[in-house]
Image (cartoon, helix red, strand yellow):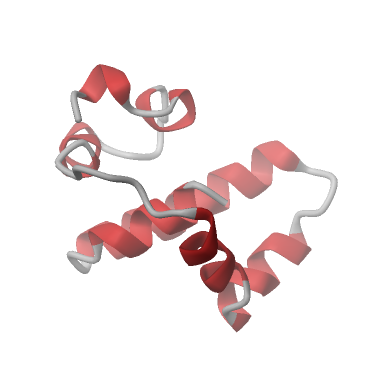
Length: 85
């Protein structure tokens, strides 16, 4: 994937660093809906999503911060799953 092919929320993120965006662009395929739904059920992710109901901007900020933490831990797939919620 080319960096220009990243979803807009990722490409224009002020939270994710350029090197993190480059890491995200290295994937060949994105996680499917079933994989993303499994992440949605994880307690820490469910809590994050419920904490910001009605405030999509803050929710997206926290999801990007969580994805950044996964990238720092070298968990590229989990980072993508969180970003695609």
